[in-house]
Image (cartoon, rainbow, N blue to C red; front, side):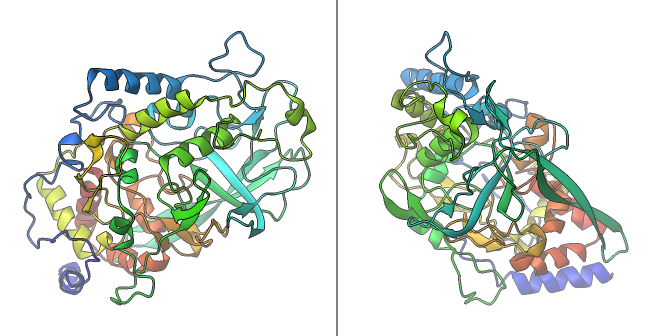
Length: 465
């Protein structure tokens, strides 16, 4: 009876606080026509391990070939120079991965860091306090802004990552206990001086579905959710991160990454090629060899740039046209009950549902599409337990971009794990909810007050996305 009283209170309170989303929540656990189509007709019906790897429907024969070519470049392993091939040399000299697909296996998500193993889609951003003239992070002397834990033969890697864990315990209102493992990161084998005290931000690679649709969102489709002063008094603010566009040399709205620190898909991809694999492009043309890494600087490169504009364009086309899987199990009773809870707890205060793309898109197929990303793509204070304490343009050390939830229920199928949040610390959806703090503290507490059955219903709904 107690949980029903609590749920009634939550339902009554939060139906009046449903953000700026034009989604109209329903109080009954009913199917809504077309709710399973997260990207309209562009979605795919796949529950296979390749669910994140399909192109959107409608591409022409020529465009399908371009998509396939980009797919090949995304999956190919790059090698160090000089090499017998000139199409895929230039790796490193220091790097985190040898291929895009190393981090985004099957276009999916990286794993949490495991001591003693090579990271698989996990990296650490570094910086010194302050910002440069573009508002970007200040590099650490000898290391730059991202730690490279691998290197070509004859070159020193920068350092290795070490994780220890703190156990955080808690209890649901019904008395059920839980435990969370909080990773605490440090470094060993530092090759270019001590890294003690530097600002660091651990991050796992995200799945790459739907990126072209995010790119096609007009700025006001994102900023309409901003409520920096919390004018509606629901405890949730949300603000945009304005970051430096290195292609246009101007400040633009950040759309990509854990801190919304990349304004365009081109900058996101070129930045990953540069930071993760040490590959130069026309956008980031300088070798990633922070002073005083002289052996790195003197190493033979794979061309100037190492990734040609033609290759970069093919990767961008591929990334922009990866389809989002349609929902599964969306008519099951527990999923429908969970949907009601998702809105009544005001999860949509950050994980907003309906947005519409504009006409500035990578192709006509991505224009004027109503999408349901379950994200407002804004920055939110997520509390001290999730803080990395490393600013990133306007993002503070406690702020993270709301991540889209589309495809979340298929990560286990595609990537054989369910590691969630920025460093993969959450072992599953339940733990991810329990890690929420800051602006989401009240929502988390309301989740903890639910019965075990309702908690499972809510998780079943999220798994259906």
